[in-house]
Image (cartoon, rainbow, N blue to C red):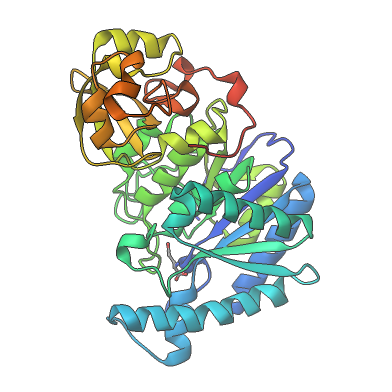
Length: 390
Ligand code: GLU
């Protein structure tokens, strides 16, 4: 492909790598599954895993497209029809991966938003993934499209792949697509468009999210890829958005990136990174004294909370806000109702006000993550802890 720069660099040894394969990388122009392409990707996965000494976790899209092909359906479809197509397509897709990745067995793991946002389900999904890897199986993950409707869905497999990288404690996330990485302009209309080989900080390129490139067969565009890169790199997971199908994976195995490498931030520990990515259910307005205490690594106490916004339950994520600026996110020990009653009061008054005192802290420091610069939240003790806790 014109203008593609192949940058060589030592990628080091990976223990685990998650590789996401988009619909556009598995189907032809008519949207039909292209088996030789899938088989070449399967070979690329095996070469990459062997070269890096890594266990491979696959996130494969394509269920919807394959199911539509099998049933002879064309878009637009109703939601139940799309669900049916995904159910049919998923079965065919997993069979094809099973054949193509032989002799390794494959496992089908279908996840939905709840599996990554609810602590118990997250831990459960993580255990299942760990067990499959222990058995030497290649997990093939997809969103559970047949039962997950819009409000229960992550919606795109780029985001799913970043969460899968958390679940797997992966060192690297590779998003295989039909464009060779992130371009600084639309390469189809702008001949001067250049691919970016290395991005140090995803936030500096977020304005390129709207750049259109590649086919329209997948769900995500560059925006969801950048979002996935942000989620993953924040947890210290190196992210690659590359093209070239199986050959692109084989090149990566040699250390050549046929696309863009997003450099990982220092590892914050999966648990804190997980908290930072939870959708907040409410906001706690706090005073400057509380902000100073948080900056010193302390927990948030009721005395520092001035106002409570939103309705939330024990363990929900809440934003900590001072003068309109979100300074931290954490998992609350108190419901919004209870907090209304204890805000601004001393810890010693909680038992009298609520009749019971389960916690001194509104948000314990272990469940709190600063939303400032990652370097401002050193947390060595957290590194390696991969379980979110409430
Ligand atoms: N889960 C969808 C499928 O397998 C794909 C979602 C996406 O393309 O991001 O059809």
